[in-house]
Amino acid sequence: MLHPRLRFLRRLLHPGLRVWARDIGISVIASFVMVTVLYQPVRVEGTSMQPELRDQDRLFIDKLFFHFEKISRGDVVVFHYPRDPEKSYIKRVIALPGDSIFIDQGRVWIDGEPTEEPWVPRRYRDTRSMPEMIVPAGQYFVMGDHRSISSDSRDFGPVDRDLIYGKATFIYWPADNVGVVH
Image 1: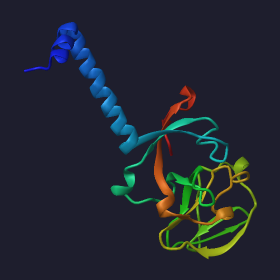
Image 2: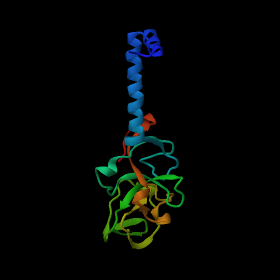
Image 3: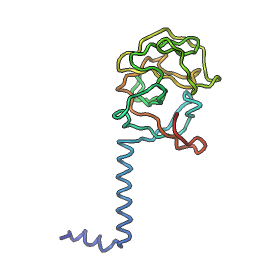
């Protein structure tokens, strides 16, 4: 038996409105689950990931991918800035735990081999060098695609795996940049 208030609401709502309200409720719950568990919308602030990601681009990050696949070289990840965990950064993974990395006049070498980085246009390259280092276990060396202005692992060191919380997957705004993050 329904409570008297619920009977009143049931009579008040037309059957079509009940279906509509149910569908809206299910949509809200599904959206909440998607945003809190699977995907999260974020806004890019800054130009260190140009040309792939521009200032004020809106994109979705996949927060669940870590449980099903490894972080790979070339992945664009979102992480808490090691020097201030209240801030988030977005950068590209360049070297994995255990990799030897050094940079000579802007050219990145991994395990003694020069790397190809098609995501870094010539005009965004720089001439910075960095002595050889081994990326510690559980950490990742990350860099921005706009090398001449990026604050990245060359400045703050490799990023601990525990600080990485998402992988950039899809740009949804602005319309002229919609698509999968490469």
